[in-house]
Length: 465
Image: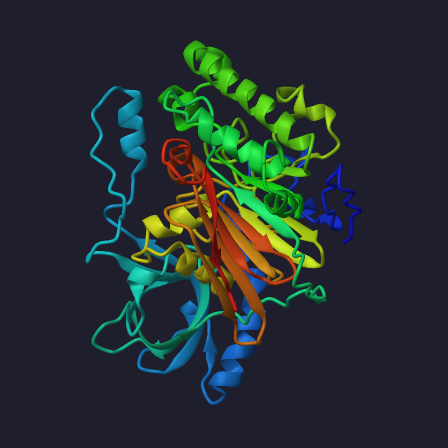
């Protein structure tokens, strides 16, 4: 973690790195779209059932474990299953068909929660509605849990919940924290939502980002040393703007949509130029996002290298999946471009991105709403979106607000959560200290060039300790 810094040359600090996302890479030959999605839920339940049953026996040792088909009316028992949330406001496939037929669809609300929502518990054979002491507004489809309660004589077909529990936290890889050096931290930079190709693209703000991370045109020695201590840049999706797509792109091949193809090509060219400048100075991990030219299904596969002929020449450019797991300086890091978090937000009343991220850790699934309302591959033998580890750092890009939180689970394991908004909207990116566990918000604004005594960038500390 050291680097020589002669007076005439400033050398960027380095940190050991390893890509751990092999489980998210799906070879083209293994993408079988003929499989039924029921296998996804079956595999999810099968993977978590044994652990939940063991936890339930430990917590309620005197009560029997039942399958839904074995429930005896009036008997208190424990049942393990997968949640399905019946929501009248949830978008319907009929609306999508209406759009194709040029029929005006009903407006889709930002939040689909209503008083008419119902929670239903399913296992391999049967389902039953859940009522009672369970916060349906804070839960979503796809969560696997154990419930304690009974089916009352007067309300058959309904399970009166008294308590419920989720699986125990996933084990965390061993972490050897770096020795603190008060004079020199090393940082991971995170930016998302560049929205290149948008007519309202802020070119000056993007130039400030490049200059800040590449140590160019920075007059102050202290600022140059600070920039050189950034060991890696993570671009967490939505590098292209939504305007580079149109409605046809979701239902037709891109080569059939001439206008969309031209707009996307211009955006990709802008991305290639920008990333080539960055990769010439700093290692860059480029994740796909909702609006980027990658597949719709999760895990999204890396952007194809042929799209980036300029930046692809640099070995420092790493085209990665979404989600993306990697190790940097002994930190095990999990990053997502934000679709998983935003979809849970849409179908619950949880508004804070950090609460949503904490929920996915608690439920031990990165995308519980997939495949119900979020696209994913029809996995058959295993579900890579199941969390079999607890990260040291969990990042979500393209969120509504900037924030961070250090959370501790029931096993005493600590995870640093960081939510990052779209750079195009806020001019904000995150700096995470790999020695200090501090989080800083880097603000980049063109206003700094128009106000006397004002800087074009500013670091706002958001210490976790």
